[in-house]
Image: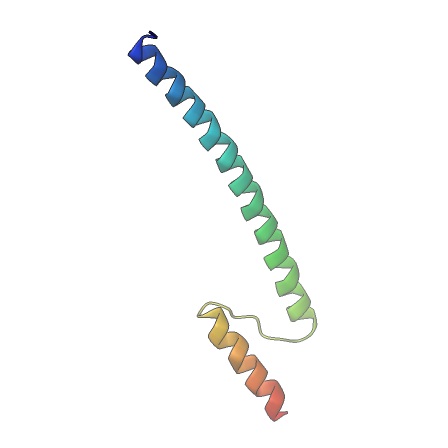
Length: 71
């Protein structure tokens, strides 16, 4: 039978590696989201749109749709 301490040590090392990989993927996804947000914000700015999505994005989207409908 294996040493329980060694087994636990191996388990912890494996879990740490899995978390490290997951963290790297999440950081990459966050970076991609930031780049996309900046690009889309710039497109809206270039189109003359005010881009203030500080509040609820759904509310802002509905307001934009209502404003466009009334024009």
